[in-house]
Image (cartoon, rainbow, N blue to C red; front, side, top):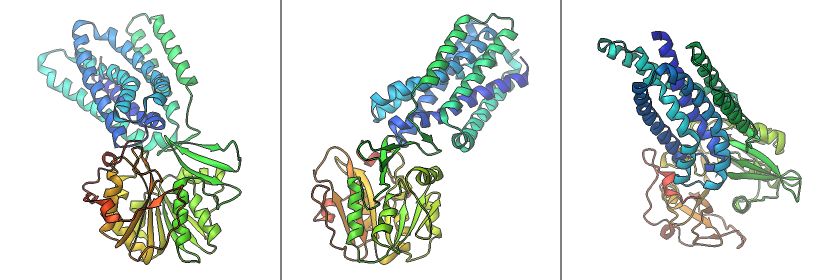
Amino acid sequence: MSKRYAQVLVFVTSGAVLVLEILAGRLMAPYVGVSLETFTGIIGTILAGIALGAAVGGGLADRYDPNKLIGPALMLGGILAWISIPVVTVLGPGLGNAVPAIILLAFFGFFPSALVLSAISPMVAKLRLQSLEETGEVVGGLSAAGTFGALFGTFFTGFVLVSAAPTRPVVIVVGMLLLVWGAAFHVRRGFDLPARYGLGGMAALFLALIAADPCEFESAYACGRVVVDEADESIRFLHLDTLRHGAVDLDDPTHLEFRYIKLIGDVIDAMPDGPIDTLHIGGGAFSLPAYINATRPGSTNLVSEIDPLLVDIGRDELGLITGDDLEIVTGDARLAIPDLGDDAYDLIIGDVYGGLAVPWHLTTTEFIAELDRVLRPGGIYVMNAIDGDENRFVEAQLATLAEHFEHRTVIIPPEWPTVRPANQILIASHQPLPDIVVDPEDGALIDDVVAFTGDAPVLRDDFAPVEQLAANL
């Protein structure tokens, strides 16, 4: 085997492992969400597969002719890549979304392919080693090729593939390339191609193609679908990964379907009469801008939404109409808000989730300081938060708001305390809060926000363990 061919082989197989690692997050997201725990579980599982694969591959290379092993390993790696799709589809709905479920799903879905593909590198090294005098050059060169392949797989997938093509077809193409290359490698070295690989490949491809896809649309940020209400076709629900992120009534924009959205509507209704200027952090189904425009003519809304595909879905399926009264800026709110002017908004609504948690960089005291800057002196910040049990995230968020706002409260669920996580509406302002009328069936305002907050820590850019503080859904 030539030096160049060996390096290309290691480059490609290492890159394929990282392509599958990143795509694993998208395949698993509809079942376990997108969070720090999700990516930690995937990365740890893939690293374990790489480590064990290198050990197993080295051992096999010492016992058998690597020429006979590399082709089958490539083919098996491709087959296992295909198998990951039906495995995740079948196991995902029943495992839940706790950390053990994440690890189990990553293990059964992607550990086998990582192990097999990572076993190829030491097999190639065995073929390249001709004497002890060149050990350093051979091992170092192949290690560098594998690292560059992993870097390419990471950057190309994260920056190009995820946004350019749906996840499942990409996995199928990766598996096909590995299978074809493995077959060609095996045949060119004079070995017969066992029929079982062809049959196994066809079976795996068939299962991958028929596996149910929970995504109606897929972006770089989420797997989603729009569901029409069976009882009222004018109502449509937006599902992203594991959660329902919004609902709109195409015939009546004043109809707020979800309890927590109604509570935010109660806060809006309690503000002084007349038009208001509102900043929305997160767009979702865009029901609140429509509500404000319907109930307060002359208002303006600026929505910061990170996912441009959600804007397209909103226009195509959720009745979203942009104009002078509703402007949308696509991009991360943390980066967009510093460009906004001081004292520009009467109301800021924070309703943004990445999977099961508020993105941590949108919770910290540094970010709240920016919101305080763009909020008018009598303005109100309203934030949707999901927590329960010990309620550590909500308490920490209230402590963080206390760093900037003199007046705060929170609307808790009607059944309180609750072990199950539930939506809570946090409200903060420099001025005394208006009288907010809440339906007892939707929730209740707490009487003593200081006692409710307790000695919770303030969230900072250098310490905001949001996922660990929040109760598991």
